Length: 621
Image (cartoon, rainbow, N blue to C red; front, side, top):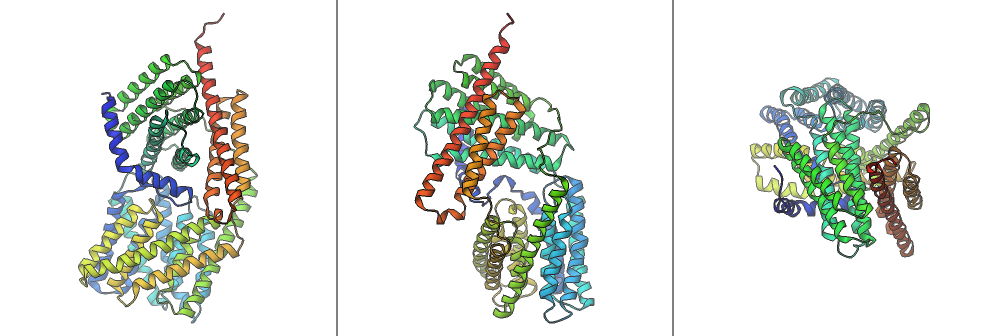
């Protein structure tokens, strides 16, 4: 069944009205290191997490034992530890978290009780152990962070050995229950992240194609405007590529995602050529507009295939035929090459991909890489330990009611260099402020009824897990409301919301100080990023002009795209506040040069495709 132009426009218009503002906000936020990924929303995982939390929460409320709160938070943390990936990897990481999380809960509480200030030493030591131990585990970053969180929270609840064993047992029971629920009782398709990431690439390509369609005959847009789509598409393609590497070649879903990735790269390169042709006001605007609309129709067909695979083959065949028909009517070489690229991409979508085993080249020896990783892990662990010591000192000076909340903030905020930590700090503080105020209002409306508050906590658990990968600020808002609500249920007291806000602010500021004072890592300078962007894009253009192999050109194109993104993000990070106006203007012009070089390389490549296709059709003399 084919789709009429009227039907396509109607569906596209509806989609744009619903999601255009959200996706534009996402493009602006990711430029400043703040992620907004609507495609990672997973309500089914949220429902499962709500049920996982509900069972131990009901038990804790029924028995009136505050120590069972550890089972509640253990179930939640286990759901949080369940990151996207193949089944074997997820089960392995979750099993480690269940066992060693219980040990961290045991030793953290017991050792912190041995002396009045023992926690100041125990917390940093346990964090060092957690970070170092998980550094050797593949994809163990989140696991290490959560184990460190369990350790510092346990230090905040010092108990003699007997009570510490009970606390650890509650953690083990809650985590084991969540483990069984995730892996056996309520399984969710583990390949859903791959499908969602593929859909995200297509939607961002569709946004770009729609803009090319509506602006093909208008004056060029501002520099920042037309770079938004290029950056958003490249980032979504790289996220898909990362998931494909994570899953490996274990199933047909991964193979389909690999075909989608290959097709998306081809389509993206062609649309950059169309974008540049529009900006340069090239001849034959009617042909340019026709090709842009062909891409728009094909991408909408592809999107509908992802939504309804039953008609997939017919949609792809129909779109391929339309692209072939259009190519026969075009006269300008670059647009012929773009139509041919669309035809090739659609063919790839319906043809099994041959695995060539190619991987990105590794630089340096394995020993050098391991030494570099160990050095970075040591610095990260020492930064977090120093931040913890600062928090413990602040807890004694200001008599913080819940110091382990500030300790948690240090661990989760300090997750990289200055840029990442700064962004996390702002998001953590803002999320805590909003979440604390919202919790006060909601709890006032709900009232003192324990059942109503328990239902609220379960709903917040579901929302937190469903949104955890969408946006960190939103996640912190809901997480803050959840922790305040559960604390009010199991350990009621005065000023819980304000304590949560203050503790998170102190912990976030401690993380910022640690990353600024200990081995400060501000990333590569903007000047260097711009130089690398220009060099990478010129290398891409030179590879096309030298008529190098297609694989070499594709590798150069990706390197150029990644270098361009790094330059764009460096231009918009927090350091630009202190740049003089003249410098900002000069850097902006340099970014414009990078975009133009990339566009010219794309035009040259598709001009070459058209020439090669004509040569292949001519009979030998």
